[in-house]
Length: 109
Image 1 (cartoon, rainbow, N blue to C red):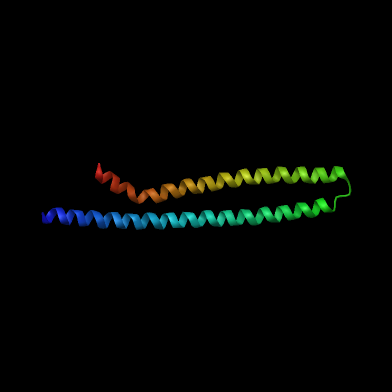
Image 2 (image 1 turned 90 degrees about the horizontal axis):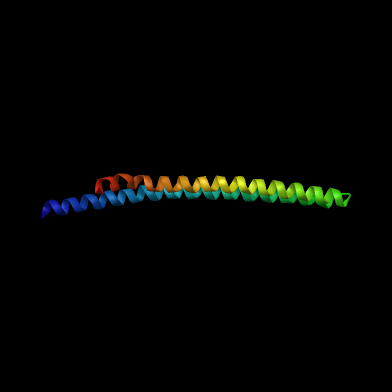
């Protein structure tokens, strides 16, 4: 009976330690994602402001259409690249958050 209690206490402590490690990894990953999203937002706002200024100073309709087309193309490419980067950060976050539990799952088998 005493051995069972000790085993239960040991596994409980190990699981709690693993949970804390996982939470630390999750927090670090979430912070990286938030930082990346903030930087992208700043860059996107700056690019939009610059495009608006160019558009406002355009001398002809053709030049305005060219400016708008270039801005739309650059915005799309930037968004796709950023979505890919954030997707990779989420995948890495999931791997890192699960990593501490791998040993617990292996022991359970």
